[in-house]
Image 1 (cartoon, rainbow, N blue to C red):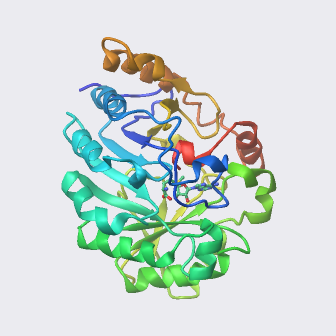
Image 2: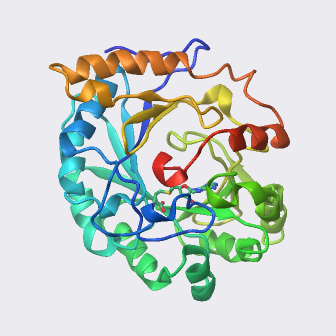
Length: 337
Ligand code: SAM
C-alpha cells in the first residue's frame, strides 16, 4: 500500500470529507453565506454519491485509512447511510467517523453504526436551552440530547462533544461541561474560536484562550493529563480525578499542532484544502468526469500534498495566525471543521 508523506516528513492518513454545505442550524460563529444554512433540498455545490466514493477510493489507494464525514450537516444528505456503507467497503479504509450536530441522530444512529460509522463527534456549544437556541439560531437542545443518547445506545462511543469556546456567550458554562465528563463516560473537547464566517472580523470580541478552561476545571478537582492515542485528532487531554470522561483542548491558534498534521480536507464541492492557514485549493472536479477518475484524483492528491506548508513557516503566534486566516475566503460549513 502507498503512503502519503509530505515534503516535511508528515504522513497523511486521515481525510476529512465534507459531503454537503447545507446545515439545519445556523450557528453564528460558523455561518458564512446564510443561504447554505438551511435544511432545504437545494444543494448547489455538492457532488454526487459516486463522486464522493471515487474521492475516497483515490485517497484510500494513496494510503489514507481514516475518513471523517462532515459538512454542513452530513445527516441532511439523502442516502448518507448508503454512502457510509459504500465507503466502508473501500479497500484500505479502516475507520469511518462523523461530525454532526446530532439533531437527526435519534433516528439514524443505529443505521449509521450498522453501515460502518464507529464514532461520532457532536457539536454542542451550550447546555442551556435558551443559549443553545441563540447560538444556533433556533436549534432545539432536547433533539441533540436524544441524538447523544441514541449514539451511546448504538455503540458510537466514546461520544465526543465539541464546544467552541466563545467569550460572553458560553464561557460561563465551562464548569457545567466539565461536570459532564465526571458524571458520564463522555469526552468534551473545547475548540478555540477561529476567524471564519461573518464574525471573523470581530474575532477578538469572542476569542478566549483555552487556558481559561484548564484553570476553571482545576477548581473542580485534581487534573490528570491523559497521554496516549486519542484518535486522529490534535486534542490534548486531561481528566478531572475520578472522572469517567476526558476533557480535550484543541488550540489551533494559541498552541498549534502543524508539525503533526496528518490530514487533508475535501470540501463539499470537491476541492482539497491542504491547510487551514492557506487559501490554496486543488480542484478535483475536472477529474470526476474522466475515464479513470480515481487515477486522476490520485495525481491531484499528490499535488495537494506538495502544498502542505512547512510547519515552521506557517504563521506563528495567535495574532499572525488570525491575520493569515482572515486573508483567505473561509467558510466552515464548506470546509467541515
Ligand atoms: N454540522 C456538523 C456539526 O455541527 O458538527 C459538522 C460541520 S461543523 C462546520 C464542524 C465543526 O466545526 C463543529 O464542531 C463546529 O463547532 C466547528 N466550527 C465551525 N466554525 C468554527 C470556528 N469559527 N472556529 C472553530 N470551530 C468552528
